[in-house]
Amino acid sequence: MAKYGKKAEETIESAMHRRKKGTLKSSSGQKVRSRKQAIAIGISEARAKGAKVPPRKGAASKTQRKRASGKKR
Image (cartoon, rainbow, N blue to C red; front, side, top):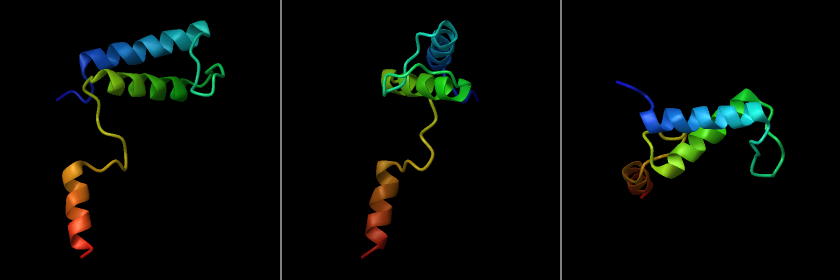
């Protein structure tokens, strides 16, 4: 089973091309030079578009948060 969907791969690839051209900017407005940062930005953009991307590390789902809050009582 594929980890990323086709649309997600295209979005990440687009971010990599923009980095190569020098037009990819970080949230602070600075030019992105790091390959890893470009991939992270691409994944973030894909997630915003609703593409198939694994959840962020450490991000709990709603049901996991409900279970955790129930155990504290």
